[in-house]
Structures are given as C-alpha cells and as structure tokens.
Image (cartoon, rainbow, N blue to C red; front, side, top):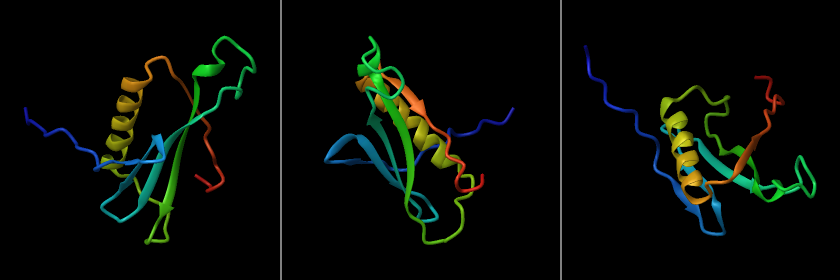
Length: 105
C-alpha cells in the first residue's frame, strides 16, 4: 500500500478588521476571501438560535487568469482548515451556505 502525504492547504491571512474573515492566494494567483457573516435574523427572527447563525461566503477577490477557477485540492483543504479554526473559536455557531449559481456552475 502506498503512503500518501496529507494535502496541505494554502497559507491563511486573517483580516485585521474582521476576525471571521480569511484571505489566501492559490498557485494560480487567485485571491480568495472566505468569511463568516454574522446573520442573526437570517432564518428565524427572534428565535432562541438567532444569535448563532453565520452565513458562509467564498468570494474571488482577484483572478488574473480571467477563467473560472478550476478544482484545486489545496483550495478545498484550505477551506476545510478555515472551518476547523472557526469552530474552535465559536463551537455553538450554525453555518448557512447559500449556493449561488449566477456563474452557471
């Protein structure tokens, strides 16, 4: 059986103004911002759980290739690492992800 090294993600930079925001640059020089937007009234206004809701957002800030980003294992691992770090700090958070199909994918 072959032993494979675990895939490492990209180096993360924290946004100084928003502790729930992360930036990273891929091997293709695509700059991503990944953040958790506090959304207390997103689903259930004035609910017991309202204060725990965060919307998960992935944004491409720069893309010098001018093409849609291709699948990148390191990007996937980086996003997984961001989730781990976020939940280490806010263990009771409830994450909402809205799939945006405006790019046709």
